[in-house]
Image 1 (cartoon, rainbow, N blue to C red):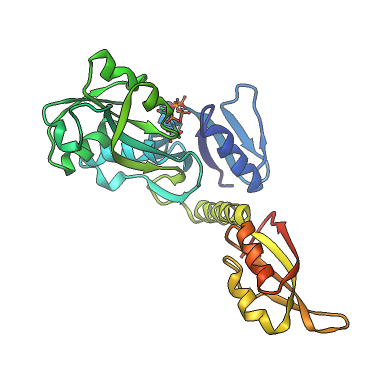
Image 2 (tube, helix red, strand yellow):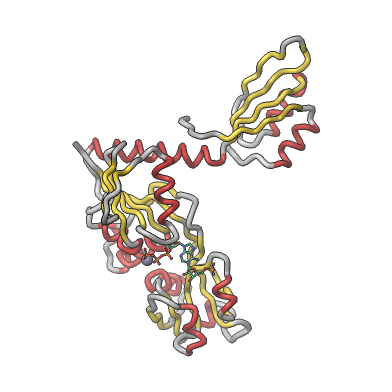
Length: 297
Ligand code: PRT
Ligand code: ZN
């Protein structure tokens, strides 16, 4: 019987949401005491809980077939492989997951001499992402020294050990606290489901497809709403056009009222108050918006 191993971050920014997504996709695990290996009880997919930086290597080595990791970490590994001319072994993203969003940014001291990437010639850049930084500089024809730091990158300029940094930013608070400002974006990142590069036997590939379909369903359902309302029969086309991401709605008779109908539709995009206000203006009433728990298109 084929079993797959899926690696997720053990603890950190991606850990909770990775596990929650898998659980919403119907995966249940027998949790072991050491918290490193959890046996999959509902699908033959076991969990490996590791440091996020280890995930690309585990996938490339075929120890795990699947992994949830930030695009920044996956791309850093891919850039390293590409530089070593091992392009045939890059990591393949299967699906972006919509959480862990951040941006890898070039930043420099506020109101300093560095205003653009072109001011970096001969300068020192501190980063935990040397490969992505080198790739970025090379693409712009800039020659700078890349200083590898595995933490506290943001203090390097004030310590005098670098002129600029390339670091992850989400809210920007860390940059502001260190009197740094963004000069340019190097990479936009979010968590993704990645797979090992080598093809697997048919049963394993089918299992990956099952997981993908479920995760896609969970992602869609997270935004989807079931919308119900009463509407003038004459306004059906107008009202349908106002529903965000809706397919053909279901139309039901309203007992004793030939001019109005009940309209039900699944909206696959977010439904805001503005949408409801416009529906009301178009003649709809008794509008209800319900959450959708699961979807299988
Ligand atoms: O122990 P392990 O190695 O598994 O974890 P880790 O400490 O390496 O990673 P962790 O948990 O901090 O981050 C895991 C992943 O979350 C990263 O690889 C990114 O894909 C994603 N992510 C999203 C972030 C951020 N947002 C983020 N803001 N990772 C790090 N940061 C840091 C950033 O490095 C900087 O120090 O947060 C600081 C900036 O945040 P703001 O909000 O002040 O801008
Ligand atoms: Zn890490």
